[in-house]
Amino acid sequence: MTLETAILASSFVEFPFEWHYVRSIVRVSLYVSLVAVALSTLFSLPLALAIGFSEFRGKRLVTAVINTGMGFPSVVVGLVVLFAVSNQGPLGPLNLVFTPEAMILSQFVLAAPVVTGVSLAAVSGVDRRVRDAAYAMGGTRLDVALVVIKEARYGIATAILAGFGRAVSEVGSVLIVGGNIASADGTSYTRTLTTAIQLEARQGRFETAMLLGAILVALVLVVNAIVIRLGGTGGRYR
Amino acid sequence: MTLALEGVSHGYGDGFVLEDVSLTAHSGEVLAVIGPSGVGKSTLLRLLALFERPDRGSVTDDGTDVWTLSTQERLAARRGVATVFQEASLFGASVRRNVEYGLRVRKSWPARLRHELATRLGMPTDAAVLDALETVGLADQLDQHAASLSGGEAQRVAFARALAYDPDVLLLDEPTSDLDPRNTALIERAVLEARRRDIGVVVATHDMHQAERIADRVAVLLDGGVIDVGDAETVFENPADERTRKFIDGELIY
Image (cartoon, rainbow over all chains, first blue to last red; front, side):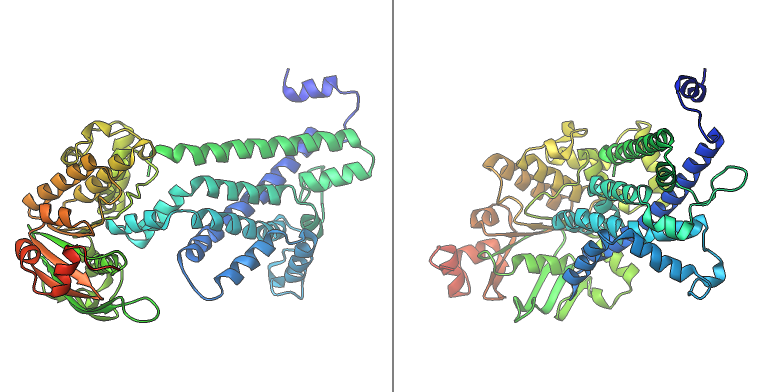
């Protein structure tokens, strides 16, 4: 007996949708959030290293702006991204309104400050003398950056996790730019776990909402476990 | 490789820490730079290590001004120099990974990947790594994590890390000021071994007795400049500058 049939058999409710519908929601959620966090990491980690390594006027201001970005209201981000991708907006020609890619964009904007801010704190926590040692042993700037990343790997793993948590659990902006759309054939197009939960709860299908909620929590747990494991195995190697 | 400062002045913010300093490190010779704390010994070593470009004057490698070279050429010059700092500053990895570091960054990326694979497959450690660790008496600690070492052991590993890639010049910034007599003696023995390998050693220290024990030449740094430089014996027994005599006798209060 598969897990799906087991849950179906033991439940007292009849699900108003098919399992492939649930699967498609999970797929959209994962696609949007993982891509958004991957892009945020690619963007934020070099930025955090650059800010952490250099001394310049206004560094405190930049840090303050990043930290403010961490708490930016997601609905406002959604609104701004919607303007950006709308027909009259600068990204209008790309036709991104109500697409998963628009949701990636808004989640990127939400996750990037979190990944940058937490990574920056981790990178800044690496002893300057360790950087000097890497440089003194003949390391290039890239070698020094790699040493710092390895020394700060737990903090950076935390940053990526925090970014993923922010992205996957967020409702406001994906609702605005994605539109919570499911196709006529019962599969999700821009419906994520969060927006689906919101919809199901509003329509009184609480069991369904709770099942989706459980899946969301399980997803976050699994991703956390994977990232912590990756952050941990770097221990012996440099 | 002969590394030299020529008429170097350098500072941070207001005024110079060092003014018009000239000093040469010869291979196979131990040069001690002595002077009270805060006199600019570390700055002098950072300039020799090519960490910073001097505000005035030049740093030369066999007569060539290093800061007129291209980035790649300067990297090559920098890779002839190794520095050991006052604190060990080891990486959060095994002793072996730490000591290998200098060798690893000198490899091409494909060679590094191959080395990484070989390490994971349990290939034997590089002979240079074992040799460097033997010099400081820690060859049996290969697989220890750096964090599990005592302060003295960590500093000896830092020394081995600098020695492993066979530099031409070895710079030591107060390498034993935090160490007990036994670890100090082990480091000093390793310094003499480095000299035997024809490495030029520059050691900044405020420990005059250490300078007497290991140095061939001594430079006295005071008031932003080298006030006295010469054979260790001459400087200690018959200093040219009255301030040197006072500093050695402990009469100079800073």
